[in-house]
Image (cartoon, rainbow, N blue to C red; front, side, top):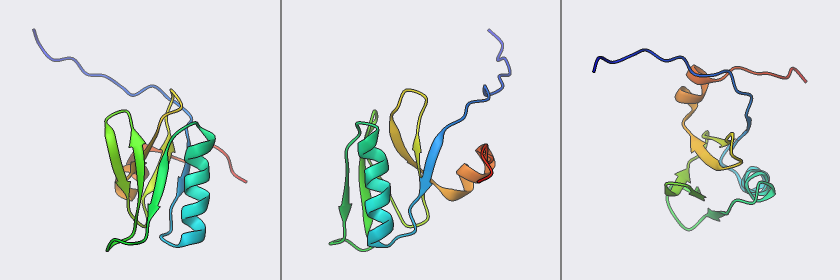
Length: 93
């Protein structure tokens, strides 16, 4: 069987960027909880991180990472470079 090429379907997602401070962590965690997800802020580690329970297990969001709400309502972190290469703003508030 030969490989085929595929294009990602255009999908609009919701995302929030965690800046690394406690206030931003509260906003990011609330974003995850509002989607029925689970997330916890860890300020006892170096670096600080937000632990997000995903479909693949617990993942860590570090300062600057985006937290995405996927097409099935799941939440997961995404590194800034991957986010910028994959997504563009759909609303211009």
